[in-house]
Amino acid sequence: MLRLDKYLSDSGKYTRSESSRLIRQGKVTADGVVIRDPAIKVDESTVRVAVDGITVSYSKYNYLMLNKPQGTVCTTDSGDERSVMQLVPKYYSGRGAFPCGRLDIDTTGLVIITDDGPLAHALLSPKHHCEKKYRFSCISLTDDQIKLLENGLEFSDFTSKPCSVDRMSPQSGTITITEGKYHQIKRMFLAVGSEITELERISFAGIDIDTSLGRGEWRELTDDEINILHKNAAQGIS
Ligand code: URA
Image (cartoon, rainbow, N blue to C red; front, side, top):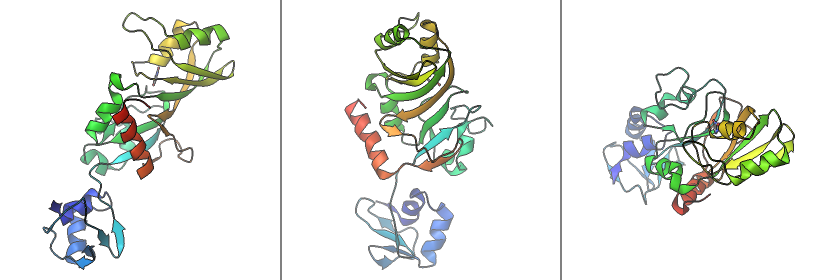
C-alpha cells in the first residue's frame, strides 16, 4: 500500500507536488472514485488510477535507453558535466538512476539507465553472461584474426570467453561478447594485431538500440523491453 500522491509521482509523469495538486483539484480517480486526499493509501498491485480519465500506470523503477555520444562518460556522478546522466532529465538522477555498465568515453551507442539496482546488478554480474553486441570499425581484420578473437584470448588479468564476430568488410563488422572487462574489445583487437577505430554498442541483454534516437537522445523502455531485461536477468543468459 502506498499514498496516492506517491503512486502518481512514481509513474514518472508528475512530481510529488504536482501529484498532490492534481489530487486536491479532484482530477484523480482510484478505481473510478474521485479522491481528494493525497495521503489516501492505495494498493499499487490492483488499483486503477486515472488523471483526467487517462490511466496512469505505477512504476516502482525507471528504465531508459540512451544513445551515448562520444565524449561522455558512464558515471553516476550527475555533477560531472561529461556524465551521461546530464543527458536525461534530473528527475531520474534524483530517483537514484545510474548507467547500467560502462562504455569508454569514445564509445557510442546503447546505454541502459535505471534505478532498478537488483536488475542492474543481475545483468552486470559476471555470472550472467549478458550479451552485448557492438558495431566496430578497425584498421583491418583477417579470417585468422577473427578466429583468434572468437576462440578467446589470454591476457595478464583475464582470459576472454569465446565470442562471435561478423565481418561486414575488412575494416568493419559486429562483435558480440558476454563479458564487460575494461577496454575489452579494444584490447582483444590489439592482441590479434588489429586496432579498433570506432565502437558503437547496438544491443545489450536482448535490447536493441532504437535507431530513431540520435546521439545524445533517450527514451523510456517499453514494457516489452523491460520484460526482456527481467527475463534475461532471471535466466542468467541473453
Ligand atoms: N570494449 C571496449 O573496448 N570499450 C567499450 O566501451 C566497450 C567494450
